[in-house]
Length: 461
Image (cartoon, rainbow, N blue to C red; front, side, top):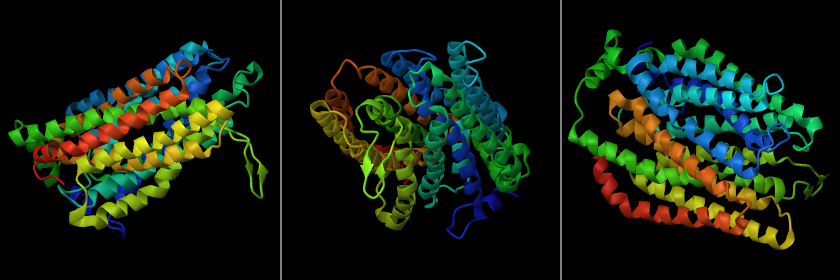
């Protein structure tokens, strides 16, 4: 199948069939990552590792930051030497291996298992993440109106895996009492489940890639001309030309979006640390439901709330962007809304924290509201950011700049770990007021800058 046939081999909804193949691969990779992430901070403060919340938050922040730094290198290597498709395979193998090393803490020293496992996941993600997103972008022609909707559908796959992961990995791996040494053995089953998910995704990818992708991503960009396909030859020719002034303007726009996204992800990634601790200590985990009675929740289950909302809202946002047509908000406008809605979300947990300070554990509704508004903000920013890079980045550096976009999460997670490290030294009201206020402020600043950024984009919608 040629690249043109791949792009025009569509479903009834008009999206390339290859999008749904990549959707499934990404779903299992995110199951692998978010299943581990739901357990990680709780695992580190358990009897197995014994770290404090401050130390665990800093390690968690450093890990999740590095996960989004290595895609810059992984994207560069794919563009110049390896090819996107082979890079995805390498990344999936390394990430699965990392999960099983994490699960080996009874065989090797626990801190060695922790460090080695996280390093393997970091490197593997660097090869996997930018390249699968770049391939999605290559399924569309320039200014194809389906692109934003396609990336939103792809993003739904990310969160479908993230939805199931905390329930399955949390059920298997999180002890009822993480500080009870007698239950310490359970963590390994959660990590093993995460690794198994990645293996399933890898097998599906290896079996189906040739059928759905044709030559797309098979060779490095500079060698694509060796393939007897007109699109790949044109991409190889473009790779050997110097950047134009217009392309440099578009690069400036990319870095502006990355800067604002750093702060979005700094607050969004509180989910794995401060919001996880809030769920564990400040939320009523034994609510009484009408007609059901008392139920028991685990803190890790709340990691599934955001993915639930993504799965529910993503199709609506995808249809919204497509139906708005010429009235579709610009990318800077969508970014502004993403930040502002996140600020509203954190305002909800500020109220919950105030009630907790006065009366003890609070209803889970405050966390649910926080995740709901943050998810709406996420859908205005994160999948739109992936689509933005695929529109603005020079073809010869597509995976590299996809890695640059992911660096927003690198900086954001560093800041997230630093902020969460104050969980025990600041009041919770103060801690959550910071993201509430700053998110709304940065949203307004983005709206003010919209005109200038659009000029840098040179008509890209």
